[in-house]
Amino acid sequence: MKTFNNWILALLSFQSLAIAEPAKPAKEKKAATPFQLSDKEVKMPGVTVNRETHEIRIEAAVCLQQGVLEYVVCKPGTFEHEAIFTTRAKPELIHAALLLSGIKPTPLPRNSPVLWWGRALKQKASRVKIEVEWKEGEATKRINLIKMLQSREFIEEEDDSAKKIQDAWVFAGSFLHQNEQSKKPIYAANLSGIIVGIWPDPSTVIQYGIENGNPYEGKRLGIEINEKLVPKVGTKVSLIFSRFEATLKKDEE
Figure: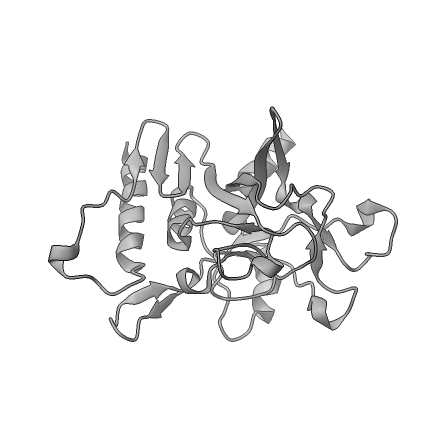
């Protein structure tokens, strides 16, 4: 129970900071329930945390099935032309859910990511495993997100195994930006719309932890979609985030 109380305190503390808009007059305010609690789950709009497995589920949809990627998950109306999924879940709530699951952020420096690349993957408590689950007919498919991506370095190779990329997602945690009108802090990812990124952007919630180059500066640079494994555009999916360190221990047993 003590652990659960700490979870709720973390969520409340974070949401008190992550204010995206100036406060409305009291008469316009409506009673809101930011989350629902049960013995097994903490539910927020578009985000569910399993209290037993610590898995986080995000409601999302496929927006791109082929092409070069700079991001993987974004908000609608932002980067659908270079991301695979969109979600209406608030980035600040995804951040809160990651904290509740015991994952700690390793922030991406705003000035230069060079030093971050070298140490990010060493921060085991910040590593995130991402899986994708969806319905295909009557069957339910669930695969590691990494399988939907491929390196452009060996793009001309016939052997698909040469195109595999490392599972290297890191909880970067975005940052707080001051609203010029309200003077209150805003969670930067709420503005940029970047939830899972490949190209380094300090506003992202989760960042790919290995530098892979600018895909627009060379055909062998960057990461692109493995279209063989991505469902058609419009498909509803669940993105499942979990602690990567826990996954490693389970695999070793």
